[in-house]
Length: 56
Image (cartoon, rainbow, N blue to C red; front, side, top):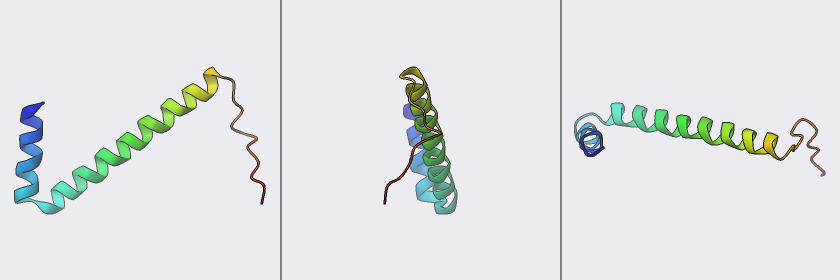
């Protein structure tokens, strides 16, 4: 894990565009993981997400 962090720090110091793309990729991946895990939790508790109605 330390080698990965050192590589990311070196990437930040040498290639800002690459570090930015890496950051966007990590954030997108985390969003997908969090979204899928919440869907599993909703299914576990039998929450129907298809009929969520927003009241204005």
